[in-house]
Length: 317
Image 1 (cartoon, helix red, strand yellow):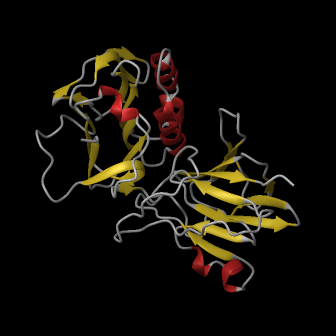
Image 2 (cartoon, one colour):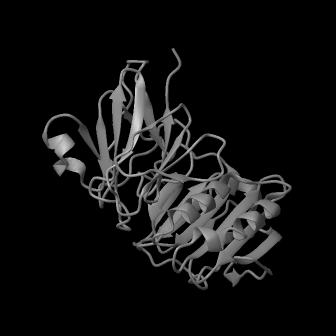
C-alpha cells in the first residue's frame, strides 16, 4: 500500500515534496514561507543543522505572527527531523513531538517516523473526518493541516517519488521552491487554480516554471497577478494575462509583468502591495524590485510574487 497524505481544507498552506511535509500559517511573510519550503528537499546527515540555521532566521524573515510545522524524512534510516514554531505542532502516531528549544522554534531530530505523521496546529485529530480530506502526492495547496500515512513495508516511503496513481498533485496556490518539469495529475475542478500554458515547439521561447511543474511560455509580454485581466497592458492588447490562484490575498490584482525585448526578458513590479522579489540560482537572499523599474532576467533566476516562487528558464541558443 503506498503512502497517503490527507490534507484538511483551510486557509493556511500545506506543502509536500520528496520526504518533506510542511504546514505554515504566516500571512505577509513570503520570505519565511519560501525558506521553509526550500527545506522540504533536505535529508541525510546535517539536516538538523540546516533546519536550525533556518530557525535562526525566523525572526528576520517573519513579519507579524507566524506558525509552522516542518518535517523532513531521511529515507536511508526511516527517521526524521522536525522544526516547529508558534501554533505548529508535529505528531507521530498521534503523539505530539518533543524537542529542544532553538532560536526561532523547537527542533527534534532522529525520531522514528512511525505509521502516521501529522503537521498542523496543535495535536492531530485521531482520525481525519471522512469526506473532507484529499490525497496530496506533491505540491502546495491551501490546508489547515496534513496527515501522512506511511506505507508499512517501507518506513522511508515518505521520500519516494510521486506515483502515477490518480491522486492529487497541486496546482499552484502559492508555489515555493523550484520544481521538476514532469507532468502532474490535474487538480480537482474546484476553487482557484493557476492558469498555465504548456511550452510550445518554439525552443527559443523562455518559460516560467511553477513549483508544481506548470509552465508559462514567455513568447510575448505577460502580466501576472490575482486578476490581471483589467490591467492596461492587457486591455490594450499589449500583454497576455496570467492569473495566479491566491487564497491568502497576498497578490495584487496586477502584481508584476514580464516584458520582452528581442531575446531579453525583464521583470517589472507593477506597484504591488507586498512587492516583487528576485534571486539568482545560487543566491540565499531575495532582492525587492523598485516598482516600475525593469530588472533583466537570467536563466535560473527565481521570482517571488506574494507566496508564489517561479523559476525563469532561458533556453540556450
